[in-house]
Image: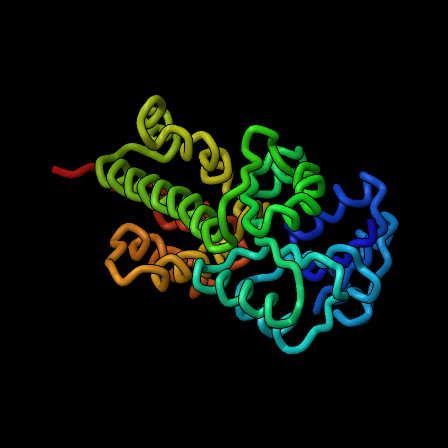
Length: 287
């Protein structure tokens, strides 16, 4: 199958590796050309423009930073081949997904929204969650591709593209608010003379145990630069969550503040665990 990959960031690269390993003909484009080099060395063709990338493609896959980038790259008039399926993996809001689906209908393009749930390690291992929303006949085209990076038990079809977008935001809400809970647990422990390692040990078996196990080694090791999922990306997703409901989301607002603080400190491209960095180090015990 001829596949155009638009967007070769960290996740786009991993998905491209799976496509090449499965024998697909891959043409890749990224606004920063150097990001495509590793895929090119692995056998992909590097395109100079989105227009060059999508020419004669069977599937046009977008793995971009967010909905505004999708608008800039695709909705600005990119001519996707008439019989191709536009497979959008970008994390967007439900409203964005409806807009993109409507645009595709008007342009005579087949559209599937297929966001992934998980970070780089499960992406490499083919263990991501995947939500596929679109017309059944269009989902049939891209599902074998998604299966290359999906955990078979977490590859799900949903009714509409907006349902897929909602599911992705729900997953990232769960990640974000539990991460914020871990930060606050570290803060509480630090205020009472318990260091980070001690707090992580005490959280075992609690509701924060999973996130503590996932991000604890990064926090105690200070390896925030080994980015699995960046603070910039989760901050963008948190803003999408807040724009997707008229009702308050206090926990999301709290984690967005922590992420914004990290961005202002120059750590936006670091792993999301970097929001715990201010809670490291000793503090005198209360009382």
